[in-house]
Length: 299
Image 1 (spheres, helix red, strand yellow):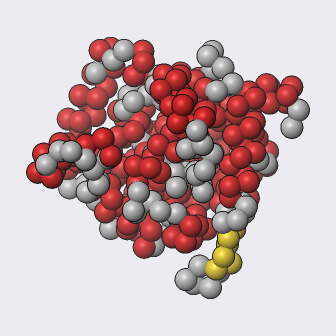
Image 2 (image 1 turned 60 degrees about the vertical axis):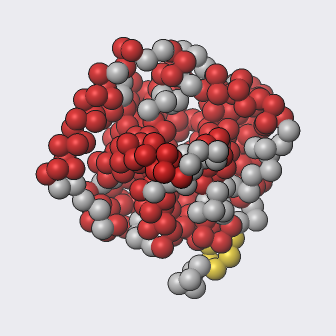
Image 3 (image 1 turned 90 degrees about the vertical axis):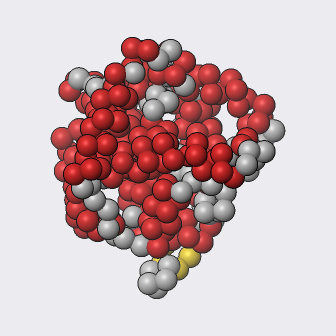
């Protein structure tokens, strides 16, 4: 890809993706559903099962995923193109045979495009329920820009629909025909409900962490269930009863009401995140990742 092509495909400060893609609330409201949608694809599940340390080190995986996403969006055209090449190279060795005897490879076009698609779906859905609701024209522009960014990753132009309406039909088809419950899905659900303490709280007594994690874990669980397509909720054994629905409505109202109070650095965390993580990424923390997927959220 030439520098001119990368410049045409990358996003900048005037883009809709730049504005909406790194709202801090997305770490709680969108990361879980993106990850579940990803690992429900049998190829992605197989790669995570055999090549990822997500269950042992979910926080390390989160940081590396955030490195990738923010560098890809906010790092400029050259960094975006370089990150896309690195991502594909990291995925070349992720292949094998899953427990059902099916051969898989992380660069299968359908699975590779699906991972990119889930992030778009999660960001837009999260904002519609919990954040800055996008106008219909902004949603369409966001999708157009996100689809173009996929080209920098190596997602072929015909692997994703040409417009937002087609994208909704594509997601429905994937949910109906390709996504499945599996052991990796259930591991992710358990992790979201009871996250391990991040490294920066390792000096706290365990009881203190359990107290701190409850509100965030509960909000993440409710948001994830709410944003999942109903068919997948049932398939995964999840649901929203009357009490959960009331909690969800209260949380959503509170989250949206907080928008005017949030500083710009929280509404668009990406540029500040890259500044804070510059040394770690320069030292190879991101470059040594085996695989990157979002989540919060990807190794």
